[in-house]
Image (cartoon, rainbow over all chains, first blue to last red; front, side, top):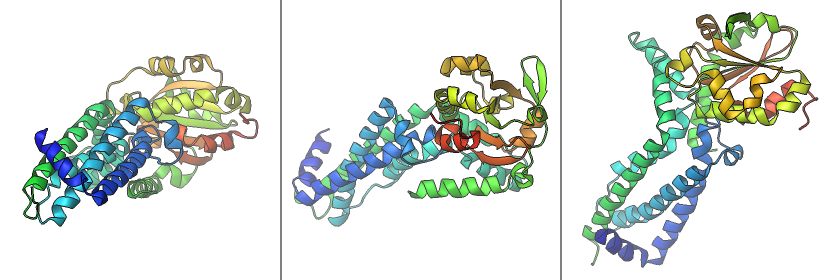
Length: 169
Length: 170
């Protein structure tokens, strides 16, 4: 927590990074509000998504966007100061949170599995159904895992911010 | 439109274009299990039909059921016959029975005259949903032609209403 607080103070005392953080939060929050209900619309994203938005999804969208609003300035700052950035956990959390709503109840997995089954006959063409059903019934856990990954990314990038070569702390 | 939506649309178009049922555009006949009876799809010829396959573990299917419940009155007036079919073996994953699923989300539809609740047979699954989509519906004209195929009725209610006809104004 100390590391995170020190890194936040260090990065966000600069106005451009505050603006980047706000912009990233607004963009990701808007994106998540439209994307997360895709699980109810069969992958369709549009104004109709908002009709299906639930309170829990709104809260998850807020938390994910908040983490991204903090992470993006950290990554940019660290990169510009010549320090390394930790992208794997960020990408993992981002991917899990954005792709999950499209994996259940859409033709994506059945189509992929049909192609895989065509190449590898040992794989059942309907094996993807189990994957879809698992995602559908464990969606909350997947979002929680995505949040944990982003928290890990935030911690890793906060350490990078505090140890980067160009930083005077 | 973001990248994921574009990829999703591309995959939907690709996968639907490969579906033999759509290519032939004529609704093939197949048997459905309605309670202890067997009912054939051809017995609905002469009526506008929405043939909807879903799995009871699927969130978009529950949303679709609720969306159709909202339009229950107008859709009934239009004469649209809705055949709600639980996927063969529920799409390969356990879940509530079709009656329990409907009872929970839209209990009035259990007794709606224009609704038929059915279980898919292997035959109907092979003819209409061989790739095992958890949520897919067909709009079939009174002449037995497939006029539209899509997933998630909740997201495509306008298409369904347009198909049902002008009687649906709600």
